[in-house]
Length: 203
Image 1 (cartoon, rainbow, N blue to C red):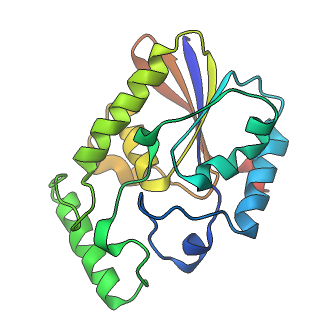
Image 2 (image 1 turned 90 degrees about the vertical axis):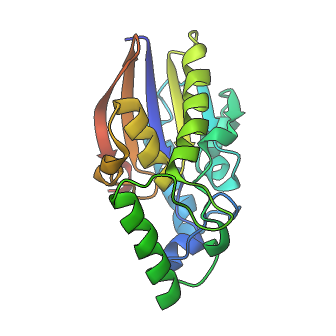
Image 3 (image 1 turned 60 degrees about the vertical axis):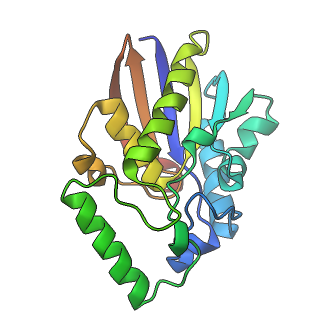
């Protein structure tokens, strides 16, 4: 094994709680539940000797791994790990219009159109390009054997498809509750998931 990644989704925000889409363009803070989730994750994994923490450029990921950063573990932000941009629908109420719009977009993705996106937003194919850059950068740091990565739900699903060399049609196979953990080992150019959708720290 050349490298082990602990990949987690950020803690809950108030928009998560309300079912409102955030995306790359909404830079929201964790709510009380999210901060509790972050604290629980830190309490369980604070003794893991991480050599580096990577987050997206969005504050909700920074706050989720705050304990590790404050403990002195080197930290780097990679905008390539940001959430997919939902464009015109970011921050909008989860009403009938939003439900209809998202249903239409998801149907396009289900039919294999991964260039489909909302106005002002990103497609899965666009996000995959920046995720690949982020992964290549993390892989290039060969001296970092054990790293923590904090990111976002939809981007995490796309990332796991990339790492596992799975088609994007399988992105829905990766559950992504707030602060869920995926452990992934890299050997050569092959990634293997060793722990999937682990939320033991929340029990």
